[in-house]
Length: 433
Image 1 (cartoon, helix red, strand yellow):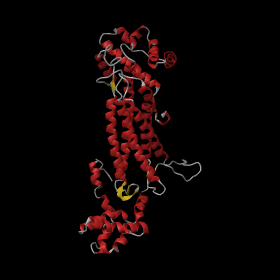
Image 2 (spheres, one colour; image 1 turned 30 degrees about the vertical axis):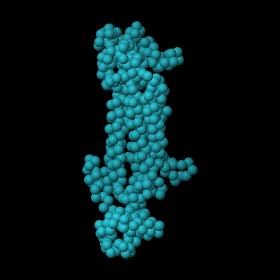
Image 3 (tube, one colour; image 1 turned 45 degrees about the vertical axis):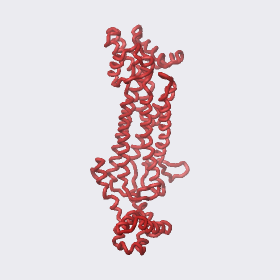
């Protein structure tokens, strides 16, 4: 279990106490519906509203019944007396379990939505703060052209906004209840009872069900969580890369007295981001299990139940932890602006190769001719440690087309920032910077 990683609110959602609380809430909502329809006497419903359960008695009964719902119902019956005959009237276990699960998943989704909003806010702040903080952009892990750290943060912010939309959609699809009886035909409980009970619970009645709420809903929820975990893994992997000794452009927070290694006192490891990457694998695996739970025998079998006792709580617990941890990392992220500048200069001007290429094409050269000239000099600079600008200025094939001043003017980092403001405006992040 991943309980030890999560914060208290999410742990409480998946506690045994909350599960039983939601079961009782569903049972009472159904009784209220029956009473509204005149099937439970007014004096009985008054007493039923005071029903409760004893966790210890449930555990004792479970040893006898080997069925958690019947053990729960026996404990509830002990709190009522003869009025207990109205509890679970016309229901099957999954009427209660799946409807209560919808309540728990709604609670979990609400917490995750708050987590996502908190991370988006931090990413927005970082994006604005570093809007024009120039750094090297890398493709295939190799220096490409300059970008800004703010654009990187804005990119992550937009991905998390999409994740917020996915979570909201998945949350709506999982916030359903079903009170439709043993195989979903309403033979022993009317659709009106379902409507009234679900309205009390704040859930939408499932449009049609078998013995259970169909598991494509749960699969959508868990695959959404897996996508979110994948985003966090992507972000954390980037921080890990930027924290490498050879790069040192960004680092996780490192507290006074913190240690990175028992053997090497100098170590400052990106262990929080590594932890996020590891937990993403767990959530992805649970998503796969949820996809395999869509196909059940006939109206329902029990193969999904055992997996969901692990996949649903653990995925929510893990993602809650991952979101809060990465928000902490981003709040305290150490950004080395000077090292970003130094790293751009490591290739001695090669980052401007495309600008030279385009300038030569503008003079009338074909793309192939211009590319060959620029690449020849770029490879010499790469291998020989020479200045790219110096090589170009001594290149006869260029001198006849571009003056030394024209060449030098192409080596300008500000060129890569000319549309940053437009991107931020499009994202609604035009403040500050």
